[in-house]
Length: 196
Image 1 (cartoon, rainbow, N blue to C red):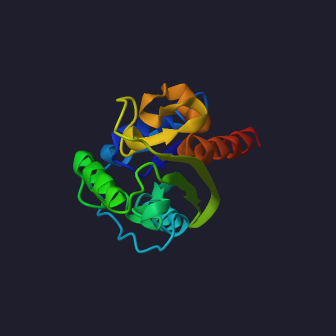
Image 2 (image 1 turned 90 degrees about the horizontal axis):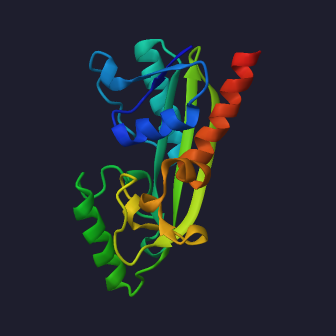
Image 3 (image 1 turned 30 degrees about the vertical axis):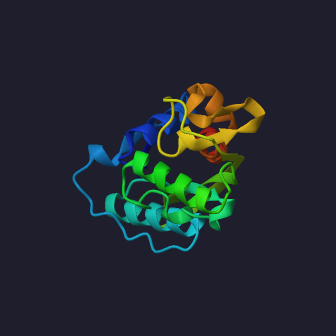
């Protein structure tokens, strides 16, 4: 079974491939296809954006398409960057981190509770056939630490393991992370479909 993973982010693709490893599926990324214009992410929630992207890429390629929308929601910042996580304050994560610490320091809220949210949707036959959400609760680390993750991982501290998600080995991260939880549910769904 060929599945399109609607991302060009190599870190995200590696993580997803690791979670779905062992299933009889061939994962194709957007990089492997002729260029497709990105859809405008107009959803107000992670779920709306995931559905929108999954359907858009499915209709553009006719392949079953997996899309996720995920991001970091920081309590002291009213849930920001939230659904705007990927494009918030540009694409340089060092700049994003500085801005987050600046905003938190202005509120005296460094170490604020935060959560990572991931919503995944699978589109096939012109409709959403499966969706799931995963959440991991933590707080903003005192400073960025670790080089194993990507995106906001270096500043997301996960108290049960006493480390940032960028300090976790891939297999450990897959069991606790927002993406691991959401794609773990997708894995179970695909397993049932492929067995049926």
